[in-house]
Image 1: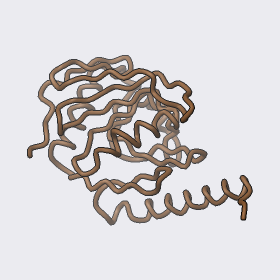
Image 2 (image 1 turned 60 degrees about the horizontal axis):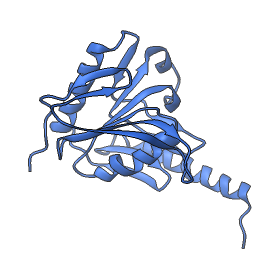
Image 3 (image 1 turned 135 degrees about the vertical axis):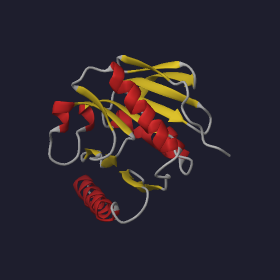
Image 4 (image 1 turned 135 degrees about the horizontal axis):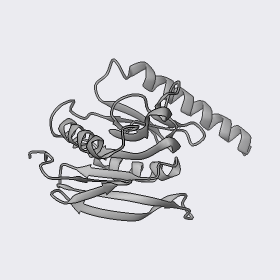
Length: 197
């Protein structure tokens, strides 16, 4: 039996809406962070305190010291969502202009200046693999990754088409202690916490 393209799209859209509704129904009752990707629901059991959250706080504060007042390093809700691509994500830090935050529901990922992720101990492939695929697909121009496991990271930019879909063309790796440029702003990575073994 062959499924018509319209039926397949409708089925995928229905599946995405069901996963999205489930995520919204459990996110206040279960620990961790829930996101929706092409593979399904991602449940990241990150610790609510410790090096992950402290890194997020340091990055937010350091960025907001060097950015203009109308640009913020936002943490928390809402999510970013691209319904056409069936992707719902919640970056640890979203660099976004304040007027672009004044919307009902999820942020449009194409309004973000940058998305920043702090790699979780429980699911590092979510940040290093699937978000590296998803973020250019939904139009986030800059993706910065900070990895407290290794004290390293990368900033990815310059979305370009590839046979496998949009991808970042430029990757600049760094080690903690170096300055890193995210968008138009450079911050220090000195003193960022590391996970303890």
